[in-house]
Image 1 (cartoon, one colour):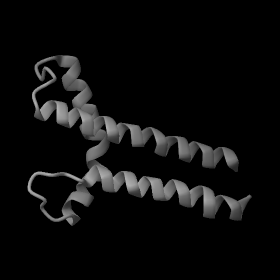
Image 2 (cartoon, one colour; image 1 turned 90 degrees about the horizontal axis):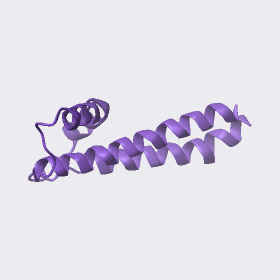
Image 3 (cartoon, one colour; image 1 turned 90 degrees about the vertical axis):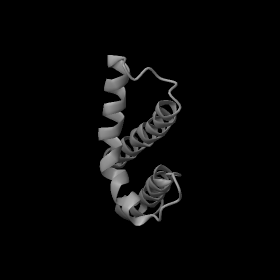
Image 4 (cartoon, one colour; image 1 turned 120 degrees about the horizontal axis):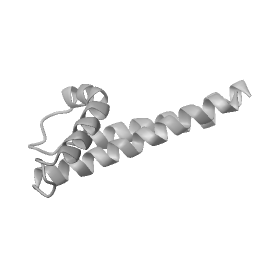
Length: 96
């Protein structure tokens, strides 16, 4: 049973890093630091967008307009942090 919990925790940890990379990439793209004409950069950007947008879109619909400031990645990271803590402190002790 611990293997299942560790696998879920690892997946959430990897997704956390994907969210962070997506936020950094969006800043680099917005400030025109990365070459958007580069095929590799475009593929990385598309992957990060497709990997994070399904989770961020519902959060963006709920949040009020903050004038161009997007805090949905922070909210999603807090949700993931809460799920990871809940997994190890509440659920795992009950089933082990």
